[in-house]
Length: 483
Image (cartoon, rainbow, N blue to C red; front, side, top):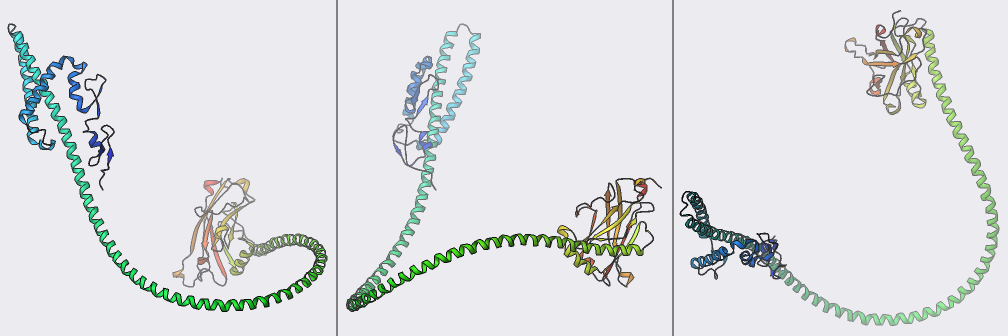
């Protein structure tokens, strides 16, 4: 799309249509230009050559500039007598060659002046003649410089006009394309208008037919309206009779409504008493519901404690059956797994192993098994950890203690060659015995995680029982004094 938009020049007040604002401003003869000799004046571009001849800051060169301007004008008139009739675009490659020839002549004259200056030092007798020659050459140089500046300015104007012509040609090409599109659009609209004309003719015929039908309908409608008017009058008479009867019934209804209002006032008084009684009953029921919730909560806690006591009783029975204390390794047989899992889901019970020692005269420990998991691992994993108890030999042991070991879920399959135990490394660190357990973390080795999908496989659980083989590493030489 072309960027040419008509505008009015700020300097010459002319409406410009086929040029850009920048291109026109660079060529406009009314644009104000500062004096190149810095006299403080701003001169129109067309009057700049005249001002240069009259400028106060260039007063020593006025004479030579006048002669140069006359000679340049004479040369230009001699070389191109038809320059006023031709456009600036008629000057082409010859002017560029002439410009380069002027430049070469200027360089030759400068060399000549330098030669004359050197020879003037050797020939004192011919000094006056040399000075006059130097002045003549400097005038020629100034003349050529003025021609060079003139040609440079002409070249800039020519380039700007060529650029504006190119932009104009682009805009003309764009206008051609737009006009072709408009022509296609007009042809389409003409076809559309022809179709509309055909539709209008059909619509006229349909309208005439509809008007004929409307006249017939109007005649029938007037006949029907007359019949309706007669029936309406009859209906009005019957309605007036009905209105009288309804008036009498309404009066009777008003009397019955008054009696009803009296009865309603009595019922309101009774209802207010009932509302008061209901509020008292609701308050009593809310207090009773709170007490019931407290009782249910206490009952759940008691049930959880009973379940835990049952588990502890089973553990104590196992402990009483084992008179001898074990050291470093314990094989823990857990029976009735499914019932214990069910109780764990109801009341979060924890299974506790028999008490054993890490080594002889070592730390007193036992293993806790949360068969239904904890927190976000509930119903998915069984969690096991080592709990350090207060023991008889604690004063002789190093604290805090670091206890490491392995917990192995033993494979109970009959084929010994295909047995594959589920083994996990476990570690605990405690500052004292009976310290609370840490929160389970997946990245920590304080707890081991046994998925329910593994725990309840046939090869690990047999006859509703599992075996956990717990073995502790012997680290007593690292953390305690040898007894």
